[in-house]
Amino acid sequence: MKIPSKPEYVGVIRLTVSAIANRIGFNIEEIEDIKVAVAEACTNAIQHSCNGINEFYVEFEVAIDRLAITVKDNGKGINEKDVKEPNLGELNEGGLGIFIIKSLMDEVSFSCELETGTEIKMVKFLQENF
Image 1 (cartoon, rainbow, N blue to C red):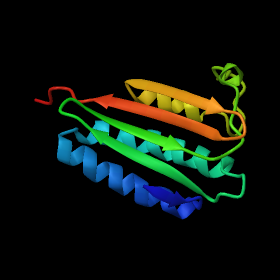
Image 2 (cartoon, rainbow, N blue to C red; image 1 turned 135 degrees about the horizontal axis):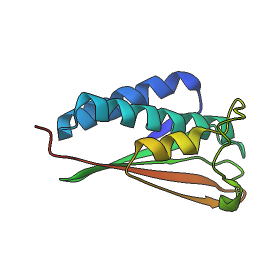
Image 3 (cartoon, rainbow, N blue to C red; image 1 turned 120 degrees about the horizontal axis):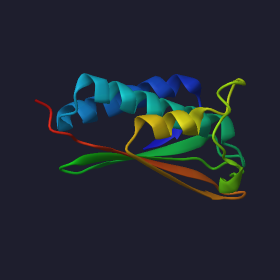
């Protein structure tokens, strides 16, 4: 999906991923975790989109045992080595997005190319919900 880089569209993506995750069989707590992680990734994409392109991309991959979501922006990119664990004793506004995503999802990977953007792939595995 190609999404305009506007904050009001984060809610649309949250609703979309919620519906997909529900259909696959995730429980409400897992769905809430997925929604928060996706919102963080989308917010990062909106904040860092540039290069004259005011949009970002979201892709959903559904499998029998997992849901994978990829969020890609066209921003300036970052060096992966610059992404560090935050100092929770000295919290500042911003800088927690990747930390939050990693704490909520089962697998998180990202790739960056300077001047072409950042791509975050998040995976949540479907557990047996009894």
